[in-house]
Amino acid sequence: MADVSSKLDELTDLLAAAKTVPLSASCVVNRAELLALIDEIRDLLPAELEEAGGVLRDRNDVIAEGRVEAQRIIEQAKTDRARLVSRSEVAQEAARQAERTLADARQQAATMRAEVEDYVDGKLANFEVVLTKTIAAVERGREKLRGRVEQHIAAVGETARDLYDRDEDAEHDIEVVERAAGPATADAGAR
Image 1: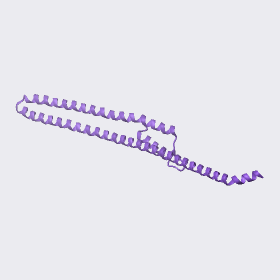
Image 2: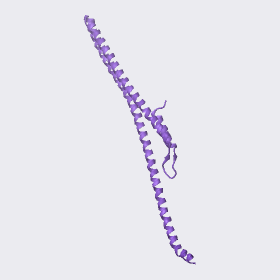
Image 3: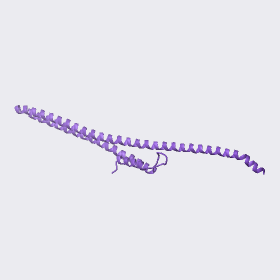
Image 4: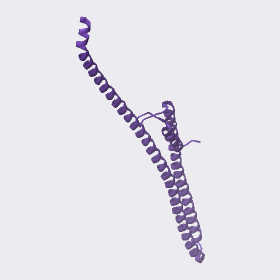
């Protein structure tokens, strides 16, 4: 299954392997192939975003389950405590045990919550790195493409100026030859 990163690698390889335009830094790429690759990348991004959304939904579900479980444990501890309190010495020990159970339940709930948040934070950080790399690669590709087009335009402009200068020099040379040949041509016509 292709992912955004592999498609960006394909895009980079396509640009790197493109034939260069002589006397310039420009290159020739297959427009249809390049556009198809960009469309594939666009199609993959929603899948990456959906995956991140799934991670967020999973995080919320796990946190909700953890809270429900923590509440159940707390309620069970309260019930155990109330039942044990009704007995004298055993009731005092039971109250202490219930408090420890309640404290343990709260600690477990806090630990579970911290673990879930760390897990989700790690997934989101990974996704952020992937998106950052994707955006940077697309920006580099676009900058390369813009730079090559600008270089090609500059090279064409320079070639046009050279041709124009040569054309002016040729016209000047023809005028000089015609002026020099003018009297000789007139003498030949008179004979």
